Image 1 (cartoon, rainbow, N blue to C red):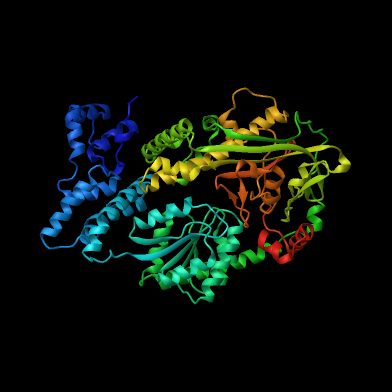
Image 2: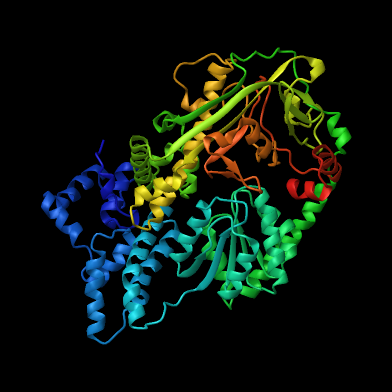
Length: 626
């Protein structure tokens, strides 16, 4: 096996073409195009790459013939080791011929960004490399700005000005930040308003900045309603610029059905950062804007028509309730301990073995399944480098204890009440109002509701668990500690993504503990089986508000109050967004048959029924549920 220094891995597309082809012939067992034995050819060509350490270092130190070339390569490679020195060299060259510093940005640095944008679009560079390129670009621009301003050299031309914001009530910004980086690396100017941005501020900024487009992001389902409010406000203000919609809970269908009808300008769903550049380029180009906008309008109209038909193909709520899942006669196992427990400081190193790395690589837009993607011929090199960086960050977070995790959880007596689950402690109760599938099922298939997995009072005693965990305590301090005084998107994104992975790991670790110790209904297997945990091969489930089986979020407010989660630093916004952002709460259902499912579309009869049970108006219920 070869021993690889991850720090010296280069961009795959930049490797010597002949050497790369010969190495691929060996690794992939291909028949060499030039004939002969692949191994013999590799040995022969390897002789031409012999050299001592000094020679290698010299080659690395002198990439690029001129300072301009090195600046372009610095942007492409995300390497700032000689950045300031080369910027000053080029700046003095420009001034010597009576030019202006702004030319360096437009004629040199932007050439590097062109290469980055092209390679990212072609799949020859990956998001971690793009973020590092953006870091170098920002450092270069920060160095040049004082000179540009003193020379009154103007500003660099851009492809368009985009106002970006995470909507009111939502604190998640990872996806928005990734899109911003990618857009900036493709010559778009981004005005990032941050998180929890009020509608009025978004609209006022778009008007004041003469924005060419507005981009909205949100992670939780209540954010979808906020996006609709922004669309309405943009319409009232007379704006015409395109409106881009993105985030984990957004979809093409929701954008077409719930947001686009409120705004006469083009509203478009953007599934991920890699699509944003193409979408904006077509929307803002005079040659393609009209045709592209017309195509989107026709597509969304067709989606709305299909959605209307699907809504008709549903059972009345009464019939759906007459077809529940029916529990078997298995008696519930009494917990070893009832009531609330609190863990104020969960060591990070305890959580690391429980991390599911698949979403981490997905967030960085690296395709494939973990761990196989680490060895992928196309993405493996960057995936291994990214994984190595993540391990380094985790080691610091663990050893220096600059990021904290905490949890509060418990198990209580409870019962099913119709489609509700009720937890009890003395004369106190917590009611979790749930929804039932209303889609037409094949014969013998039930219309599920999570309450089906709990006994009613008449059926006998039962138990329900609940939890709230966070791995975001001191998150901003951790980011500042890691970055120092530098504005480093890569470090910021890395720590935020790791915090999200750690809170999910904390939820997994805590569930394992509850199943095997505090509740004890699952025999302790000794060391947890990582693959089994990821595949959920264990007894019971831990649904969280917002899951497809329980998409309504408002119960989080009552749940955090029931758990006294404020005692571990967790709070909740008016839109049911938990703070810190890297937080999770939910319930434990222990029955052997408990499973996850999607509620899907529901009818007006269930919306009105939910409103009655929750003591709210049907309109309020509709906002929460659709």
